[in-house]
Image (tube, rainbow, N blue to C red; front, side, top):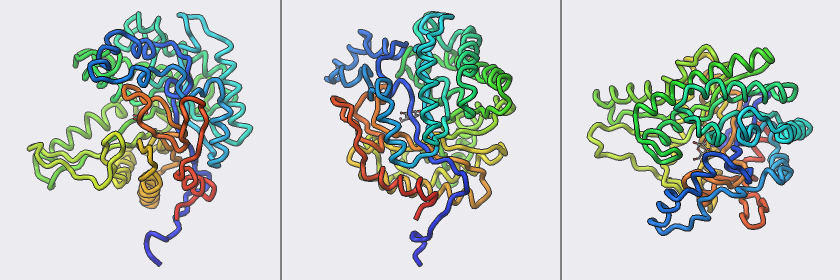
Length: 405
Ligand code: BGC
């Protein structure tokens, strides 16, 4: 029998899921990000690049808020037993200290529907946008956010505690702080290492405080973050490259996790990238396959990243992994290769308990707008109809049978 035909059975009770986030799918939001999308500065930037602003304004996004049944239908079609999504803080607390009961009710109703369909909710509390009033107080640069985020967390967790056991406090703190405060690509478009450091500090504190709040409400609650880790490899194993790899591992992959090490019940991993480090910067790695966003696809990397996370001795959930692939050329291949590597890690004693594909449906991709298509389901952004891509069929077979072939 050929190696690639061997059946790889996953552990019993493995979570097969998909991930999304509120701002990217819900529509109808008014937060710092939606305002930035429409700001003169942003419109000017787009105009200079000859781009149509409407392709970069989230507006109705994938219309999930109005019709989340359409998303649940996709989940059922896939035989998912888990779903990771985020709540939008500005929807729940549109004004400082004033919580909108109807928004909380909406999310409660949604998780109840998931449960009725045997889909375990994994709830993200913050996936990047913040309310306008919080932005006006200085956003993540302001120490006050630690208090406000924990008050928001308390309100939400008290409301959803009976239905939800898995909580993700923060999504990708390193990505957010560097894109928004160091590189200036995302709102509030700052370019300051000091601002970034301040933001990181507040994110650490906010997570720790939120962790305590969630555990106080229910000891059964499992809390973690979704951490974007990269597989750094040293080119030709040269000494200088090995040293740079160590630095990159420390700074990008480990530092944040180590700072919150005592306040995590699981490690949430988002895996998208490999980076071959070469101090000469001359020999870029050549990838056989690249995504529509030009990202080199390197599924083997997830094995190394998982092996590295083993040191934390905690259960690991792969909270995100996927690619922009409108033509669905590589998605099934990528899922298979990724999962073969996850399987290999499990065989090597890494405690992986779930895989969440990014994403369930096509959605609004932050600064890149509607063009990148990450969905297992294609979305027609005029009618909001969802249509399975062939990779959805492929993934369904895996979720249904708890194995890859
Ligand atoms: C983010 C998602 C994003 C995805 C694809 C992740 O870094 O958490 O919100 O859509 O990458 O770029």
